[in-house]
Image (cartoon, rainbow, N blue to C red; front, top):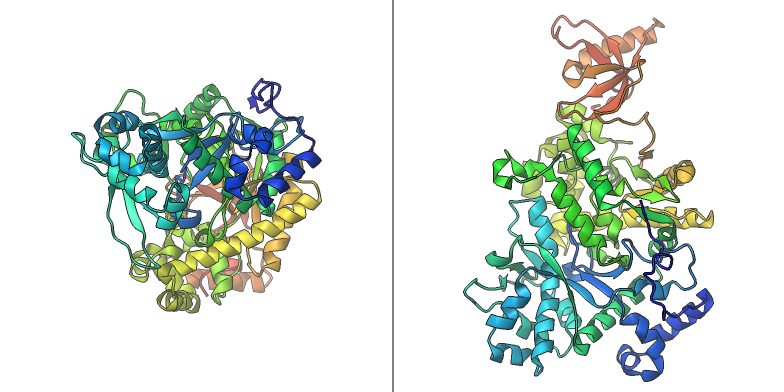
Length: 603
């Protein structure tokens, strides 16, 4: 594993300012009190600016849902392969973020196209200095780099991304119209077509302009670029200060800064080795995609490539998130409930599992079926401790399909909700909750997105309280939305606090640990002989049979359930207990499960 020790590995410059934490905090206070423009021009602050100008800035790595203000993700990177503040000898937090100098990620060939084929008069409209104009164009393209990975993850994606005018105006703040002039230049048709496309469609309060790369630049890879002009560097510095000021008081961010000190990352060779191991065991990602190696084949040679996650893509994402330094944690907007994004949240989960904490394999504690259970609490539902497995059993559907549908179900427009396989289940089992959600979608100023806003906000509220309590015990954890990453010795305490807070918040679910074998297992794990394997297709859910079994139990007859591993068609599994039965009407269904008999999902 590659330890993230900046000073020991020579990644901290020799002339780096060595401040005590107290001195660093004074510097930061001074930074926040002064006007940003004055600060950046004030020669008396040269020492601090030396550090600021060493920002490693990788913009827009939002591979999944947009999670920050104005639907844009801007990320500042730390130096040696992971998020900020990662040495065992921390003398000053702030300077350690600024090792690499003014790096952005841009699409392959874009720089050459701008330099050679964008008309001089268009560049002159952006800035009188041609070099500055070119770098402002490059900075704009960073806003769309995440779509490269989105398309890799989902070949059916068209690569569109919404960007708010207010954000772009602030980001390229030479003058109020700079971003428009940049957009015009990038939309210019060259022999290869435009660098970017814009739909120029705006609906107040609902839709911003959507942008995407032109056909010649979609999926062509990313390269690093060092900004050279003072004007472009200055904009990055100003942007960093805005990001830092917005996040410095956030409890989860402060926790992460402590957590990163103990983290080490896998090497690329180790990632490839683990990827090969997982693909041989038919590993599936959390989105239900089969992990495979692309090798020398093209994607079109694979059947249903949209159902495959290629190791090569995961490695590219990891490199993108690490090779020029790592992201400074950033707090999302109200649209995302204030979710935090960092390198952990954007990293493929199977690679994230390889991260070590103080030399030990990390343990992940995550809430079971959190958003459905939050919905039940917020919208007057009746069920408690709902799980994805419960729905999979009740619907006779693979659990991977249930999990995938739940990722977007509550955020959909009402007609799209009704088209989801989950709709019938909730209509039957939680009619009041479902109707309350639908009514709110039609009544809210945020339309159908109000549900996800509320769910995200509640999630962040819960996780923030959990993190604050753990920090009081000097336990610092990684954060992945509804999950926390911790050292094995802290796992039980983390779960204990998570379980306590979730109930306090009125949400009936619990946390599960990734190292808890009683929760679930993957298909490649050796099973204890005391468990029997049962295909889900053999389980009887008939109410008539349930009544008969309950009658036997109530009479005092001995009814012995055996420990079992229930297997779905997609090879996912979970633990329960089963009783072998004989049903004349359905003789092929030879088992009932204890959870259905004693705590049925359908009342």
